[in-house]
Image 1 (cartoon, helix red, strand yellow):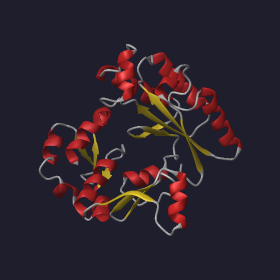
Image 2 (cartoon, rainbow, N blue to C red):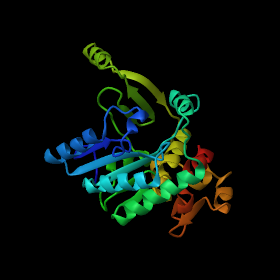
Image 3 (cartoon, rainbow, N blue to C red):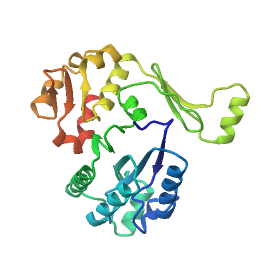
Image 4 (cartoon, rainbow, N blue to C red):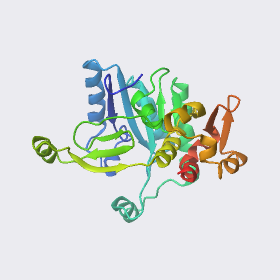
Amino acid sequence: MCDLSAGFCLAAESVFCPGILFLGRRHDAATAIQIVESARHLGFSEINLDLMTAWPGQSEKELLEDLQYAVGLGVTHVSCYQLTIEERSRFRQWLSTNGLKEKDDGEARRFWDITENELSDFGFEHYETSNYCRPGHACRHNVAIWKGGEYYGIGTAAHSHLGNKRFANVIDTRDYIALLANGQLPEAFSEVLDPENKARECAVFWLRLFEGIDLAEFKTRTGFDFHELYAGILPGLRERGLLELEGEGRRIRVAKKHQPILDSILVELI
């Protein structure tokens, strides 16, 4: 199992392709590979590699090469995120100026399928929308978050979720140290969720897992019955084949064929 106490996470956007630095990362392929090798040398047995895919100009051949190289590094967990380009962002303006276009829906789906098929062939399980792992190496930290669990972040910019409160620490290290020195919590942001909103948030995150929601566990964790919480829209989602019940009605999940459009489904549950 991958967790923060025994694991090492490397964020590296499609690191194995030359020229990828136009995405704004501060490292290149050689640096990413060196860090993975150093982590293994230091004794980390659980190593995750983040890959950014479907970026403008990336070919299917380059995607395959990235995936094969990542697996060849011996990592136990791979997170693959398709690039999302925000409207009115500098990056979108830069792409337009340089004649580059983001992937359309059809291309994005092909990249999704290639990623899933290739990592599956290498023995990785696709257990969450963007996450793949060797059997038995799912990330415990992330699974806890997706199931509405509590977590405490320590350090600058760290996020926490305790009870119904969600908060984040300040980004600047000097501010962080100064606040603690003065006996103050270094919070930059906080909010308190009411029970129903927390239950809905829990449902949205939990449905990212391919195994879906254990309905009895959901009620125990949130105090809400899933069917009652979504009584107004659940029948329609099931009729459209977007959500499906399994295990004699004990579990509900997003139909696998609709996982690539997960966000458009989950927005109806918020």
